[in-house]
Length: 332
Image (cartoon, rainbow, N blue to C red):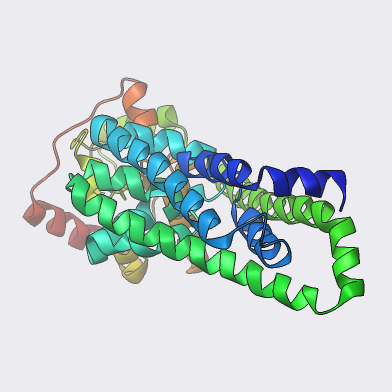
């Protein structure tokens, strides 16, 4: 057995606990390769790495980190979600997808959140933000953590059991186990980072700066021209910290906007904004709309916070009837 592998076997539980704890807090260090490795070693060295103990260690790390995130979400709300998403490689699906899952499935979201990229980062603080009772949160989060741990530990265990049947393969696996583990972690991180960078590079080319949007609005008012068509893509949970909108905005969900793309104007700019880091939601919707033939769609750089922090005007949202009338007039 190599020195590195011997070290891992000797301190397997401590490494598992700290690694999972760090990932669950929000840092982009994937734990799945480590769980697979621990499961494999529990089959190859059962006297030194016990699969059941490993499962309890993983669940304990998840519950400690998730409880911490839950109370941060309860105390700081959307601000902590923004911070966590900035560390996530899955920021494009980070907040909005999780909010939709909670809206449809409630606490049951916690049972599978750790299997879905992005959800594992923000499901717990969102549960705190929406005021889910802690007892209910703990029950579902423990169930989801156990399911996640068992799935990957068992997958690793079955691989180790197969490896034991071939002495030659087992010997080679022992020599290269650490290298395989490192390559698994690095490949996951590089793949996710590449996906995020590719997405963001496409979005940056389309963005409109807050000061440019302000000039467009003011020029339309002075010259009595048609203003840009501005869409607020925020989820209802995102309205809680500040329900105001950019002047002239319509509140529309991303799915509704894409499904009614035929009604969007083609003769002026369509400006989208959200509260996600790097305009992930508005950028993703903008890319979808461009594929549907709407070429003048642009995400607002910095989103709602960028506009507000620049000190530009915000107004109360118009009544639903007025919004419907505005949609009809813009489509005409």
